[in-house]
Length: 102
Image (cartoon, rainbow, N blue to C red; front, side):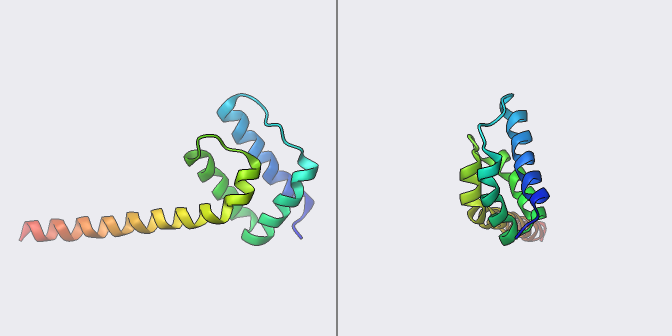
């Protein structure tokens, strides 16, 4: 079980991102959502949750806490696929430049 301070820190970070994006505090019951925060922190670690929260607010048009908590595994998978694709494209560009310069 994750520490209470970590759960509240994750929820706070979500609220800050939401407030920055929309200039409104989200309607979030911290005490009820602490269970979801606990589950995702236990599954993925606090640092990874912070990283995915940043990514979530960058890519998702209308973020909500429940959606984030339910989709974090899919976010991690999608982000890794994007990173792998970027590396693969970079390698292909490098090979194409080498081929064209021959």
